[in-house]
Length: 355
Image (tube, rainbow, N blue to C red; front, side, top):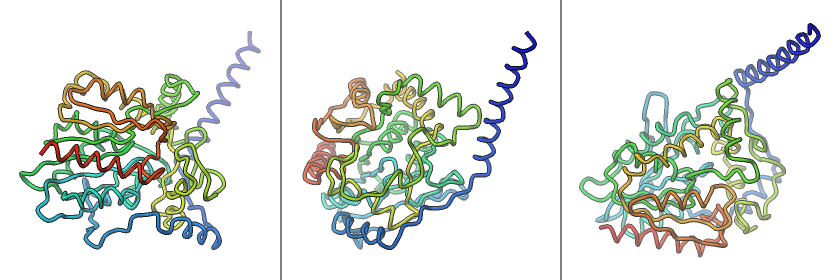
């Protein structure tokens, strides 16, 4: 019996030691960006050339400060006699530069367009010592700040619309159900209503990440995630998010050129808070609060978000329709530019129909 107690005590001590080392490592975490060779930088520049939509001269870079010492990078472009305002909300790891294609096309259609890099994205405020980690303090907070930003840039007495991608769509729907904003319509592109955990059981993911978060280890990278680049940096090969080798590494190429834009792997806390936020999205009170017309764009080969859950969410809303692209992957915004231009045209039509 005494031997069993000693073994148990030793095991508990070992676990406590492992926990303490992990906790202290996170507490005093240091960070350095991965440095690239001149050859890699040249390869990145050549790969990216001609693929990003140039930032128009009319684009105005701005800073939105929701609270002291929290600066969020934003921008706006005006249109003559604008029909209304469209807020473009990028997805996880995306930057305003990566969404300039839709910004310009929506602006050319006669709308004032604004965009925001929420906390943890682009050149906005990063909450952790390691700025590359995907981390969410609170989805409710992100939604509230998005609503405040939209009110600060909208044209008074004209319609307000949202064009939101992936994680940006999740934040937008949190805002829609909690902030009761005066929005005319939404477009959600490959919305991250619920994450896709692949072969790993979703309930187990929620339980594991919740336990680690409560133990103070939520800032650990999730398994398989790391700082950028996640593995060998190779340009011109398909990836799970994008089957087109000509565009699959656009974000990598941009991150190579501008390290301050880098966001890569998600943390345990990010997964846990996203899972609990998904439960909020599906609550009856939240669903009932979203009454505006919603156009949802889904991809048939999406390994990043749960497309079935997104469609169930759409079915539960008062006014939601789905536009499905069976052969597309999650990175629909850059996998096939001709197809994505159709998505943007449909979005503009959706907005125009509500005026």
